[in-house]
Amino acid sequence: MNDDVLVYAYFFVGGALLLLILLGLIFSCSIPGLDRRSKQFFIPSFSILALSIIAYVIDLFVFRNPGLAWVERVVSFIETLLPPVLMPILTAYVLHFYHKNYRKSPSFFISIALNALLFALLVFAQFTDAIYSFTSDNQFVRGTWYWVLVAPMLALIAVNLFVIIRG
Image (cartoon, one colour):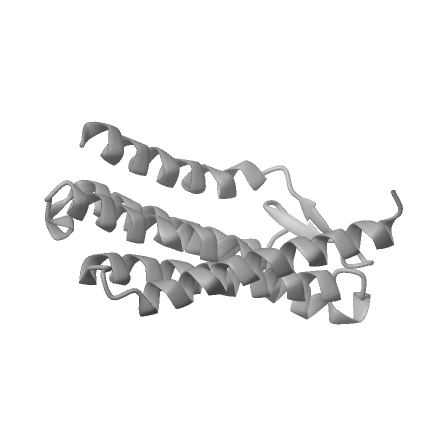
């Protein structure tokens, strides 16, 4: 399969995901039977996912253009930052589901701290090639310390699994 067919497939997948997310956002806003807490979870979640997919589609436009390297850096930052932002929202929603106050939950604060760590690592990554870099033709390359960027994301998943299993 040549690269052009793959890019068109990525555009198709990005468009399909964006359509599904927008439908979820519309239904979250308009379904009368959805309680306030569920709306507070679904509307921001679908909004963040929509922004992530928009960044993904922008990435498809710029990843082959070396003249847009600065856009690629910004988009990669956003693509990495936004999905983990969903985790504290999910933690708060699950804790509410189990009738626990998320404001007093260590799991929620750990989730927030892991997001702050991820943000700091992403900012650090902009000034070094150790975590990730871009080639002269604008291609994303994982550095030797890329796993350090992935670790907080995996820890966020583990925190939420712990909250769900512990109930």
